[in-house]
Length: 452
Image (tube, rainbow, N blue to C red; front, side):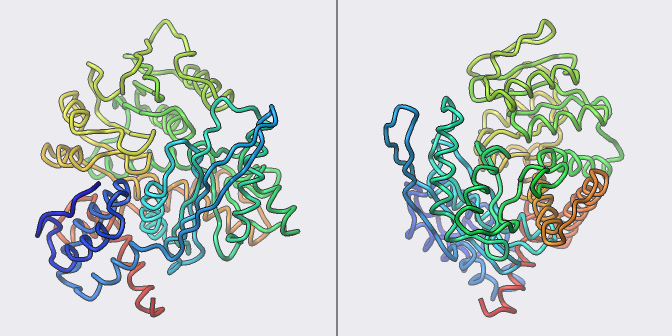
């Protein structure tokens, strides 16, 4: 159970009281409370100037709808299984609810609420007309056959379809939910509704998907990193980059780093990490991509004479030199000790490709040592940005070229960085807080205007 914050810790009396009410309502939702605490603390200077927005922020922290449902499905032996499905429709002030579907045994109401809460500010930063939401299930696709995953996805959509639509709520993929699973869900949605609208994003290119959607989160994280480096009068060339994860986000971040001249030192999964001291080649990343993304295998299956696999460890503690860290795996993967190890290794910039991968104590370490910390709601917004572009293409019944989408993504990431930097400068605070401030103000103004 997360205890109430001590008096004054948030930094503003009205926000402290609001936070304590939220803790009293949902005391066991530690991931959600962690996200709320981080945002509330960073917005204290805004509330000092605009005290009327304290109540607005508390309303954002309470989702407009919380939907939980049973998902029954049969395995290949005919045994019935039951999983729990969720869709949290957090805030629609800026447009239809928008956010991914996570399929993993770790999924709980707390995790989906934290992801939906973060999504509101992330979507706001893109400047596209999208509200925030999130969904998923505690179903574990690992080790399941294609037919079993298909049956689960169809059962999941049989219930979820009641609550979504192109102008109401547009889910996308997330951890464990690739374009393959999105395809099966979309097919079921069409069978149930007799509607071919753009109700899901991350679809295949043959039926309404957008070019570079799979690449967009990883690419966007690197584009955001580029903007930070430009302000430091440098670039990615020859920078040593530690990347965690080996799914789409990590793989495409690695490809883009390589393209821009950086050295990718690590990739990882939940079992361990692979490290190449001289930097991975494209062929190495291709091979890991084939194992992890295409074949749904494990990183330890990859063998290479120039590198080594370290079992049961995270890449942050490797005894090597890093310049940049891109955590692209999962929430809370960087603890205080990991952050201290990264500082010791020489890291000067951390940009989050995953959602909330850094614990609060670790963020404090980065700030203490003047490490530039770019939070996920800003740095990894490229994925939802291209999802928004996919929605636009679906609505217009056309498809933009790779170059068109990539240029739009670059412009969006530049705009997000500029908004975060300007807010940080105006309120004399960090880039992390600037992201929260810039994202919040747009949502707050829209809510007040709509009487929400």
